[in-house]
Length: 101
Image 1 (cartoon, rainbow, N blue to C red):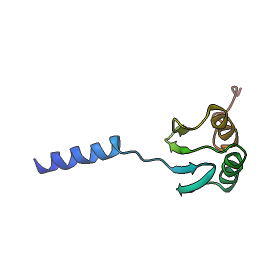
Image 2: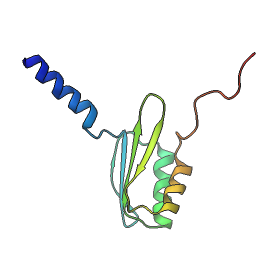
Image 3: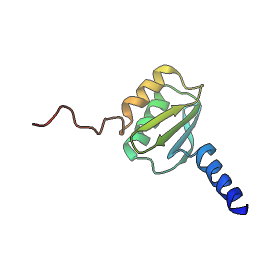
């Protein structure tokens, strides 16, 4: 019985807890908090974008076996989201294009 409870708690933690790989928090165009192993080029690009177009909000990066995904808070404007997507280094597909003979 105790094993089942421990297993249920472990499944709950794995499924429902928010575990982003990277987190960037901006307030009025300044980086206030960062978490995770953030590539230097991406960090500098985000700071530059925030300096030119000040915004407040969070950017979270999630990674699974197949893809890397950016998630923005609702306060980040659409134009800023697109510029950050353009700076993000992991947006390319890892699959090979075409077929081999």
